[in-house]
Structures are given as structure tokens and as C-alpha cells.
Length: 178
Image (cartoon, rainbow, N blue to C red; front, top):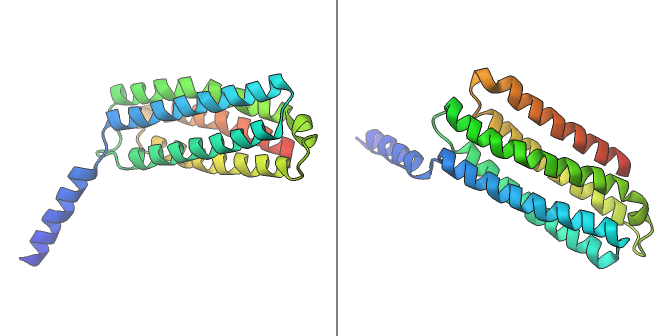
């Protein structure tokens, strides 16, 4: 009798805490908004010639973005059943496809800013940027893998292509600071 009760509780828990496609879309919309804010700050830093307070504000924005990515990862990981339908996946991919150019722009611009960051009056800023890039990369790959777990088999090539593009952009930006 106790085993049946525990099984019932586990099932109820899974139903109550399972995520939906809409939850994933909402999480990705938050990632997109945060990534756009970060990209704008990175571009403004470059356009203004850079300052230490602006660099530290970008670092704070990176931490916020990482937290939002991690939250979206948890939501994507809780979707059940897996994979999602092709129609739902196309909605998810649409947002991912909108996020990718934002992320790639931020990574290209931050790599180009290395000389500005080297010139700031505080040692270690380029090292902090490298750490931020590594942390964002780790969170991004974890989110990508969670989203790949939702992907119908006939869409895997497309999903893996988007993943490869972002990983290549991270590799180039990280190389600039390594």
C-alpha cells in the first residue's frame, strides 16, 4: 500500500512541476531580452571608448544573463513528454534563431574590445571577461543540450547546426582572451 502511495505522489509531483512548451518559450524570451540588453551594453562600451564602471556593469549583466539562461535550462529540462511536437519545436527554434545573431554580435564585439579592456586602469579585467565568457559558454551549452533533448529526430540536424554556430562564436571570443 505504501509503495502505491509513493508512486502516486511521485506522479503527482511530476505533473505539477512539469514544464510546457509555453514555459520554454517564456524562458527563451527572457534569455533573448537579457542577451539583447547585454549586447547593447557591450556595443555602448565599445562606442564610448570604455570605462571601468561600464566594464563592471557589463560583468553584472553577464551574471544576470547567466542566471536567466540557467533558469530557462531548468524549465526546458522539465518538459514532458519528450520530444516535443514538430510544431512546438518550430516555435522554440524560432526564438533560438532570433537569439543567435544577438549572441554572435556580442561575442564578436567583445573580442574586438580586448585592447580597450587591456588599457583599463585595473589589472585583471581581461581575465574577468574570459571567466565571464567561460561561464556563459557553460550555461549556454547546457541550455542547448536541454533544447536538443526536446528536438524531434527529424529536426536534429537543424538544431545541431544552430548549436555549432554559437559554439564557434564562443570559441573565437574566448580565444581572443586566452
